[in-house]
Length: 411
Image (cartoon, rainbow, N blue to C red; front, top):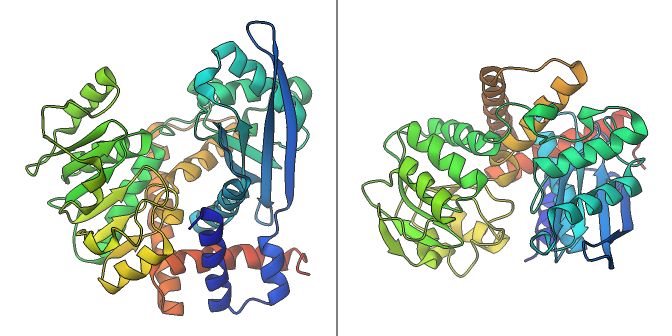
């Protein structure tokens, strides 16, 4: 099931639980604005190349729109629409004053030189500079983009509007990026996991974890969980998968992956089939890679008691039903991986104030936001007698609906 169908389905279930007016429900789903622009650049060999850039701005009832910009050859408009909508609910669940957006350019960043990527980013910014802004729409990095991409957008935007560091987040530290941003999503996963386990009288210490994905989020989550006393028994990435029932030595694995660009060949564990990673025996499973990996075909075989969705949309709705019948507790992505957007908000706040925080303050504030977010979701679960996913969706949708009505926007 694609992301748009699943997101819309969750939204509709939440709207029913909240008894939303049908006109309001309809207006909350319609994007505020969809932008599509042609970006033509001279390549290094002198030939011209054209790419399509776009930005979907979903909702701005609670504040400026917020969401990533991805550079990827297959950018599916439906998926981007779903991700923009998901950002609207995610920022509301995290209780940061934003709405949702998403965008990108249909290109293969691996095929372009650094200078071609810079030209492409600057042309894209020239085309959308009057549609983004500190109090309008604040982009961030996503697949295929990074802090350098944000630096180019900031520079190009500032040519039109004066120096405006708060127009993008996920910037290099030297240009107003926030300390702790790099680890933020992984650290948020740690805090959310702690809050969930505490609810069941458990702590990170002594729990066995399996992590699918060892990119930014997976590697930080692994590092922080292992420092907190958790035992990580299996990890996979695109190169392969490893298992060690006594616990993988994460610092050694990080060193290995930096030198060998992947977990494959690590001698601190046995090599296993990456396809079996999700069904390994563990207490807590953390999918931190792609969407749709837990589906009706493998849900019955999953042995974890808790699933923490560090990736976007890793569990299909069919799998959700199977797992809930088995008594598996799923912490949904819109809460579990909201550490990134929360620290993006902190970065934006620091830029607007012109006053930067130390890393300890960033991490303390993040813990408060993640812990309060979990508490708010649990309250909604009790009010509406639903699972954590519906608790999070009803919380997010309700906050956006209330802002919409208060601003006098309902149809």
